[in-house]
Image 1 (tube, one colour):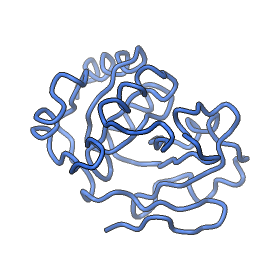
Image 2: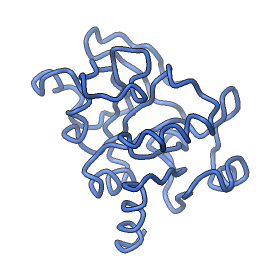
Image 3: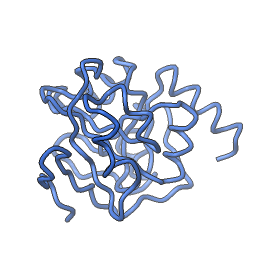
Amino acid sequence: MSPWALNRFVHAISRGAIFGYPTDTVWGLGCHPLIASSVSRILQIKNRSPDKGLILLSSRIEYCLDYLGVGTDELGSIRLPGEQPTTWLVAASEFCPPWIHGIYPTVGIRITSHPLIQSICDGLQAPIVSTSANRSGKATARTSFQMRKQFGSELDFIVNGFTTGSHQPSEIKSLTSGTILRTRS
């Protein structure tokens, strides 16, 4: 993506655009986490309950700090991307919007070095919402063609030109206990 196109894309996200994109794991749907109407659109498209919460995906832990109810000294193990994509459940701060943490006292965050996500987050100076690109109970889209076929005009953008990681969801782990709540397939 050219710098000009990236700048336009980041600006559109900051104004509420939702998008389909390849992540470090699977194809996802994303938006700016502080724009409630954008998150609501994604939840409607997926037919997903807002109670479940959503993952924040970021290139830097610093972009997530306002969402987290822990000190920076407690985040040592998640500051950098790990060998395998891991989503960490961390205590949510009082400022974390309920449409992000759902009914839970924690918020899921994943730090990644995926080049597209790094460019978006660094442009926004913020994390992005990340949820698998599927409707509730259906298979996740695995290509940009499947994204267009499943979601068509419901999304503002579908990003091409980048690859996904392993095509498997991330491991989910509790920061507090270290308990693994979901392993990779």
